[in-house]
Image 1 (cartoon, rainbow, N blue to C red):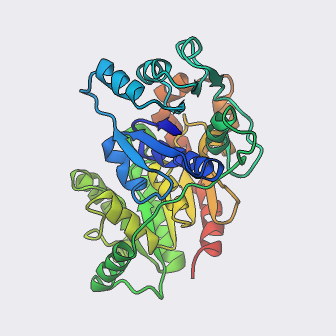
Image 2 (cartoon, rainbow, N blue to C red):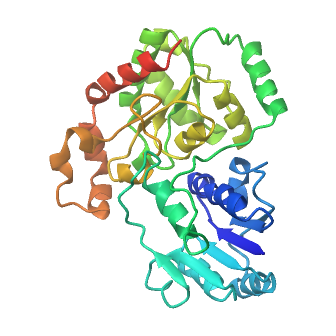
Length: 349
């Protein structure tokens, strides 16, 4: 029996959807499990022992050819977590007995089972986890309600990252924090002047060193953040230590006491490494969809809606994205600092 799971594009989504393979492997130990993803997201699921084969979806690939190869694979079930029009056609024409997706006008006529994305979470795992696992319910009544995503690093990767930190004078007896300084877009990036004040607080309180999650093309923005920080904070920022690729970032994060900064893929990756996280949500994003495994100790998040709920009454996502800059201006560091201090008390040496 072969089963295909489809989750194209975003790194955080690909990592989160990988939980389906742990559930499927436990329920169907001899099944052949395939994962269709974008190639750039592969590092977060690399070495996952529950996945037998990866299929890399490419933009330039003709849909007709992809449908043919999927149909020829004779899948027992295709689970389309991505559920856009292209993947719906791929799923619907796959010939699989079970064709499962989220409920959209174009998935209903093509799939055997569709499910709403809108759920009220019943566990600490949160909606992102629970709604994915619910997609497996047509295949079995014994699927768990929650599974935590996992990243599988090799011992050599961990060791090399540790040696690199030591060579730069980072001692593990002190605190070390990975800072997710830049979101995936400007609308998902906490203002750098605001973030600098949070970094000043982190260093003042913990005396810890700070690493930044960035790529060379983002260095100018990172240098702006560096300049906004106080001199004492700058002394603790290690600008020349960053992950040259995603696996290096993961290995460096493995050695950190926490990841702090913009909510997104980096936060999800840290959670999958069992590293404490403090996440700052972009105002338009629905916190309830992505505050996975938030326990008020090891994983804490903040959203402007927690402090200024009147700004969100009667407004939809599109409305909020148009005013994201003004909303961020309201999201002052003074609102965040009390929770951040509590988090640092709980997750510092």
